Length: 267
Image (cartoon, rainbow, N blue to C red; front, side, top):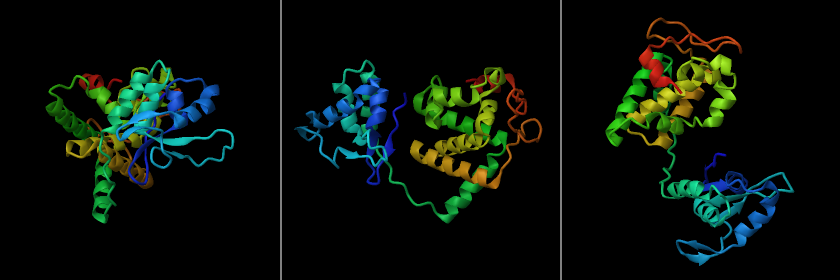
């Protein structure tokens, strides 16, 4: 279960109580009892030992469900709840929440007309597979220079782009026969061809020194523009033709890759 993190209007990182409860693998039937206990328990906050305060440490999440009450919890409170729980996976999520707690939230700046034009231009260029691959290589070089090795590059990049296990199982890998022998880029085209443009734009901005959050935001905008403009994905490394997904049961062979490229993109 993935722990979803949201940013409030004030820039505070929060998680939903229902999501935290599920991630900790606590019994569903105990949710109502547990959440009441969470909000009345005493914790060691940075400003002292106290109970959670409404609108400071948590807030009621608006919902049409009169039975199940949900709450937004600050990552600090969520971490303390996790550590105080009986969950067998509490350390994993407590570590994740601890890291999130100490990451800075960049204030999102309004996008300008010039930036819109730039993103559309880059999105259009990312319709070229060669350009996507170039941006990816540049991003990998930046990663290597920062970490001294590219050993964990693919795990890092999948996390950056949000390609969790469910992304593959519910999308590209849902049809194992269709997915057999395909490169990662080919798999992405079966899920959503414009996702390759988003990935390329994220690579481009990461190699230019943008933060992960900003690069993802610009990548999302580029994908939206690409969809609105109906851009084609062209494999111009060998020949110029649209790289389109095939109906279920057909093998995708649009993107012809070398052995090296196949190795790089193997999932």
